[in-house]
Each structure stands twice: as structure tokens, then as C-alpha cells.
Amino acid sequence: MSKREHLSPSISCVIPAFNEARSLTDLVAHILTTLTHLSHRVELIVVDDGSRDDTATVMQTLCNQHPEVIYLKLSRNFGKEPALTAGIELAQGDVVVLMDGDGQHPVSLVPDMLAKWREGSDVVYAVRRTRNDQSGLQIQLTGWFYKLVNLGNRVKIPANAGDFRLMDRQVVEALKRLTERNRFMKGLYAWVGFNSTAIDYEPLPRSDGRSNFGLRGSLSLAITGILAFSIAPLRALTLTGFMLSLLALGYGAWVVGEYFITGIAVPGYATIVVGMMFFSGIQLLSIGILSEYVGRIYEEVKQRPNYLVSQRIGAGLGATEPPATLDPKDV
Image (cartoon, rainbow, N blue to C red; front, side, top):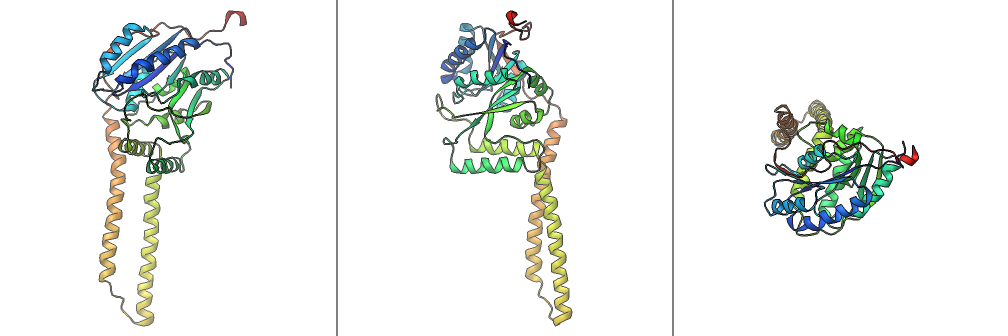
């Protein structure tokens, strides 16, 4: 890993927000205080993912108070993954930090992330120590998800690593080249590769309200992740079909042997009914799994944009921001 001890990078911070109006004022001020201590060239991009509260009003005020803040309002609620994509594509910094808008990601960890970047890491991602804010069922399902999505997959997605991370400019440019519509950002971070370092952290309590991303949203995102980064369900169908074929052949051989050896005709009504119901269920399940893959292919070929922007306020770093430079005394 190449060292970057003497680089003074510009920093972009991207925050997707959905109905977080009551927490944004304090969060933005806290993040800007931290970032400006790390670099004199910073920008904070808040992506409003179709909020229905006073997020727009709050952000207009913050943009007037802080020239470093950019407010990007999407035309509707596209979801967190497209909102992150919008912020990543807009970010101008030499390094880009991704954080949630609920205040659970500790801003105090960003200096440690930047230190790891200076040591040569291209990606520094935060891993949760615990999941005390989630139910036992959600914790169990999360564990199963990571085992399934990594099963037989060359690209391993780190367990318990979310969107809270710092990325080098070359990683950001690599992510911008991935134009797929069914986006699972945690998988995309892993797919692009680069030198990565993990830092563990303890999530903070939410600044206000309750999470907008519950069990239903987690399950939907998990299905997207599995279908986007794993063919394990298709392989499971192949294996199931092979095993059922062997079972059917074995049962057929037993029936024929029973008849010729003992002369007893095996009653077949119950066997036929149960067999038909069982195999019909397997066929419908197989069709359903295949339909999920085909449906996502359909979404991809339509080539619709991942998001639409209805409003932008603030310039941030601007289009003419120079790259990170060496300190003159070290040249």
C-alpha cells in the first residue's frame, strides 16, 4: 500500500436523508466541525430521498449558513441505495465519507479513517460491534443473509459492515462506472476491491424518532443483495432437482422389486397424490426464484436512471477543485 502521510486531501461527506429534519441541524454542524479540523477544503452533501417532513426548509437554511453544504433533492423516494449513488456521483473530494442521516454513525471515527487512508488504505469501512438496537429475529436473519450471499461467491461481503466508510477518489470513480439499476451498495463496495481496512464501532442512539428502515426494508434489500451477487438459489434448485430425481429412481426401483419379489402390488393412490403436491410445490418455488432473476433482468434492460434530481442548492467544492498535493516542505 502506498503511503499518503503528506497529502492534504479535500473531503466530501455524503448523507442520505429521509424524514430526518429534526436531526439534520445538529448533525450537519457536528460533521462540519469535524471535517474542517481535518481539511480546509470540505463539502457536505445531503441527499433528500423524497422526505415528507420539513427537510427541504431546514436544508435551505443550512445551505445559506454554510457554503460547504450541498442540498440535493430527489424527485421522489427512490430508496437509500439510489440516494447514496446520487451523492457519490456528485462528490468532488479526494476522499469521500458516507454516513447515515440518523446520527448513529460516530463522526469522531472519521479522523481515524483518514489516518488509515494516509497509511495507504483505499477503503476504510466501519464494522458494528453489536446489534443491540435490533430484535433477535433481525440479528439471526442478518447472520443467515451474510452466510448465504457469500456462499460460493468469489467476492466476499464483510459481515456487519454498512455504508459508513471512507473511500479514496479512485474507488469512487470505480463505483461511478457501475450503472446497474438493482443496486446493493455493500456488494458493490466489495466488488470493486482495492485495499480495504476495517474499523469497529458502536452505533450511537438515534438523534430523533424511529428508524425508517425496518424488518421489511431489510428483507427487501437482502433479496436484492442475494440476487445481485449470488447464484446460490439457482444452484440450490439444480441440486434439489438432482436429488429428487435420484429419490424418484430409487422409489421406482423399490416398487418394481417389491412386486416381482413378493408379488404384492404397492397401493399407489396416496403416493401419487402426495408426490404430485410435493413436486408441484417444488416447481412453483423454482419458477418463483427464476422469476425474481428474470424480473431484475427486465429492470436492467429498460435502462431507466437510478434517480432524478428536482432541486440542488449549494456549490460545495465546485468543479475546479484541485487534487490533493504534497506539503511544499516535503517536496
